[in-house]
Image (cartoon, rainbow, N blue to C red; front, side, top):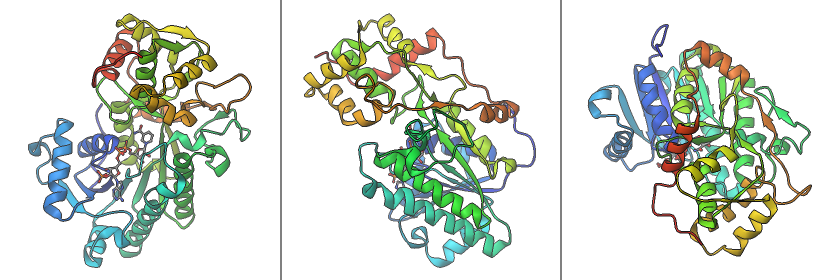
Length: 376
Ligand SMILES: NC(=O)c1ccc[n+]([C@@H]2O[C@H](COP(=O)([O-])OP(=O)(O)OC[C@H]3O[C@@H](n4cnc5c(N)ncnc54)[C@H](OP(=O)(O)O)[C@@H]3O)[C@@H](O)[C@H]2O)c1
């Protein structure tokens, strides 16, 4: 993929020490001249150490970013992002783009626990963008990484099919704390856009891949199935994409001025079929008996003390949107469209990798790799 047009000067990135954020940071260094990273740390030295250690895990050497990566110790929950007023204004005058990735990503947590970072922190980032506009007379382009979780309950809210134009509301997000907090963050961003900010919303789904990704939601599901020796036989699919594709898409869309004012769905045009994932597990030496979904959940509950099973049960509220707990009783995730996103990404030279049988075999091997898997 080659980039065209002028290189955007300076980006402020939040969340660069995170699992997705660190990959976005590496990709932004391909796209922009300078990347400032807001990193939680006591001082500059600690911020630099945390950032470089994390980026080394992504294969990015200090040589590759020398002079172009600027760690900024700060915190989105503190006044002025935790910066001295002079440093805050100097940064606001320097940046042309903002990519907001920082969040508390905990699908088991309640809204109150998540709101300080996910909602108030997002509001603080929009205030920073506003200050930049006040000081320079130009609005920086603010791209915020949201989640398709904001549409998790859209089917119940009357939208069986959702696309990039479907607005996130408390109803489409549903009752779980994490989707609610991210929908509220989107509301903050829309309010900023109404005040003149140039905002892009980026909604990934499940982020996965054949190289380890820490917060991969497929891992607990697969490990629980392997532990049980049984998989749900439901022919369901999940909106997903690889960490590599998602991080590239974030960087490409964030530096593209025409993205402002639009929402993008960062998931493959065709969702990932769970039966294909379980078949790959069988091919790679893990016999899985097919069980109807409600019986599979009951079997999990019977083995709730197994660590791999416990993890899925803790997130049952989330997974049950994909694997219904019982006929007619469950809420069910909507069908997700990402056609318009892919029209733009394809135009920019980004294509989703083929998820064929060899890829799925590598994916399963990677998902089961960390620690040994014991059956119940
Ligand atoms: N991972 C997924 O599967 C997925 C899927 C869809 C959407 N998303 C979205 O993608 C974004 C990135 O997720 P991720 O997977 O990279 O999450 P992650 O691995 O949990 O990283 C979260 C990042 O946010 C930072 N952060 C947390 N609180 C902060 C604060 N008060 N001030 C400044 N920074 C703070 C963390 O810094 P520390 O290192 O200091 O903790 C870390 O860098 C999030 O907005 C998330 O909602 C993720």
